[in-house]
Image (cartoon, rainbow, N blue to C red; front, side, top):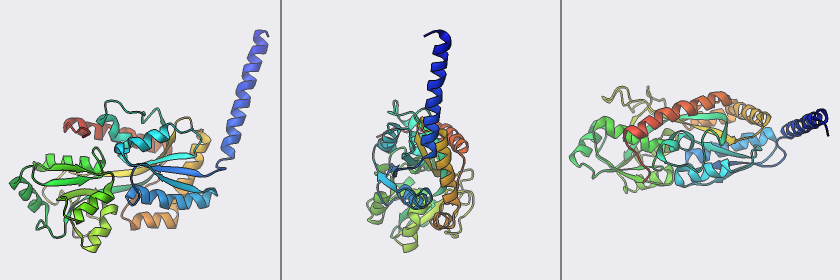
Length: 325
């Protein structure tokens, strides 16, 4: 075979590959899609994944299955998706932990948040709320700070896990208010809230959606939110700025990612389906009703959010010397 023939053969091979990839993308999806959740059933990520799954099942005409893989500070779930085929049938729903926080917490991760994932799009944003048991005599941030300073290291707080946004929010709060609290990590927000209601821990930050039903039932008391303004669901709960700590504003998000090398056409198809789902009355209404903020994005916008938050959370982790227990 001469050079001209070799060149023609090579171009033909690339052409056939491109056609095959295009055909595969055009036929997407033709089997069930799995959304991997890094937390146990019952938490916010799980709830959003299931509600999103219902809408995607309807629009994509394929069953969307939720697969809970808790543990390892989101590493188990993220690694399983990173190692999955890049075909769009295995997706990760995550808060900032897996993609923006873990790179600063671990010396060596079994996945790379940039090299191993394709951003698909954001689904929702959330704010944090500080909770205590309803039987606690603590009724304000001022009360909380005074109680903690009176018993350095004796009061504890729960979190959805070391390095999760809610744990980092508490560590930032500790630094801001100069209090010493002992960390009790859990595998998700749900078991932590359960122990707060059982008086096994003294306090915890959680996302507003996870905490709101228990606030509403009177089982826990909300002291403060990390939003810039008060939220309609809790009009009587002040912001930290109103409580004497200006400049403290913190929140998080839930987004969908796919394994690297997922075809661009498949990513575009998934992004369109997610954006349409978030804009639809059933999901948009549910997200707002659960005290999240609907927040669909393009893949490029989501990639920029992950990059920016990776810098911000990473700075916090390093400045406060936060390590995995």
